[in-house]
Image (cartoon, rainbow, N blue to C red; front, side, top):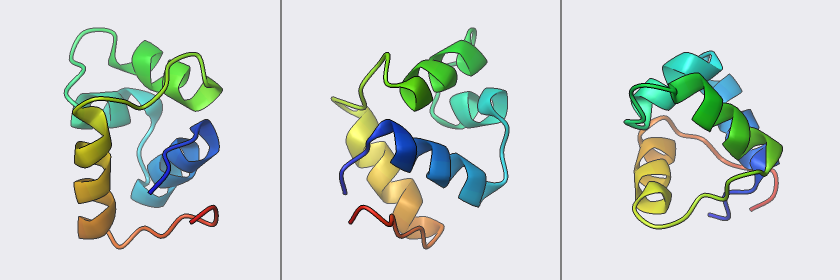
Amino acid sequence: MTWSSDTIRSFRSHLGLNQSEFGDLLGYGKGAQQRASELERGIQQASGPLVPLLDCLAEKHEFRSAES
């Protein structure tokens, strides 16, 4: 799946999490809300080990992106 800022925002919404909770889920710890916000605004791009983590979580939670 391509993890654009819109897809990341949609996925977080699908999970019913706020940005801080979503950042914690992704393992960001301190500054979790800020990092989640940067992903959703396109300031940071999903890359490296974050992509397979997002893919795994999306499959587990039956998320299908409108962009796919």
